[in-house]
Length: 452
Image 1 (cartoon, one colour):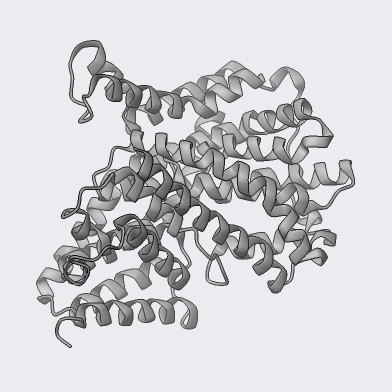
Image 2: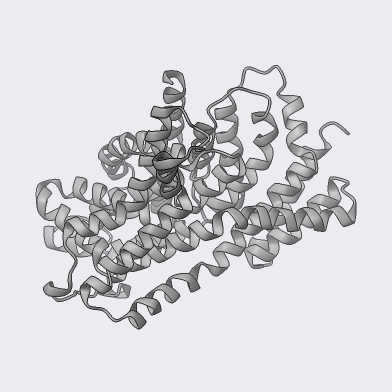
């Protein structure tokens, strides 16, 4: 009993967390702190050490990602309010034509999804989905599912999204490498699932494709006068600028062999501008010019946009920090070591274990980011004893963290309400979509692992 008690304590902790959130309707951040404390007590940690561990978990998690997360939210808001995101979508739809509108939506959502967090991208693209569906006289879901596919992939696999960034920092992975492998895996994943899944979903839930959805609740996207709209090229460059800078530094690292990112002179400068924090800052400054100053906006209006971008993410930052405290309790309480000892000598792939831990926590907790960060506490000790590509482990946790979105996940309800579906229809479309992305994503990660 003593050997497996840490695992029993974790299960009790997760049950407590579920009861606090679902039964008592307690705020997720407060519930995470309470759960962290109670789990620490169950694990037999000294009481004074529990508070220290919680503070360390909060500080370590937010210390690494708060800047990137904040700058990412600002970049997304500037792109959204400046008309750049809409311009990218409209131009691609125009180029692809009505026949290939689903592919246009898939590509546009992928590009927009890199810079915009899932909820923001969803709210921004939904009016476009409804407008297109009405114009083309097709089902909302025919256009909406490719959009949902792309933003779910970017949310689970690509920095600067909070999950991948937080996992990368926690396991000391290079964010540029995570981004590079994430794109290598994310693009074929989007093509495979985005192309096939709407047809499968139609066979499983044909009634869902006849639903009109909550079109009357959607705010019409503000149409900017043509002289105020940014060009497609500028919009695309602004959206992809942090990705370009991070990938540039990663490619230079791979060519020179300086994978620790330590160099001087021009090479050192490339690493500096390609680090996630600097790349995001440069992208934001560029967006202030392209989406604001260049469009003749005054500085006060631009700064108002930036302030509005930060306000909605304050609670999300605290929740991510709360997930970090739970992770730290699991590490310091010896849970990871227990699992590591149990799996010593096992043939189970650390990549599969990382995916499995995140998937189980995702089903239990609902939040992608909290599941991702919490699972790090379980797999981290195991990673220290095996030789594995750490970037692929990050992506495996990311893939697991989007598995089986259901009634305890805000994304489930957002999809259900916007498309006017029943709970059963939402399970057969949104929940199944996220599960398929998670499992095929894991398969692609394992294939890449065999190749490299």
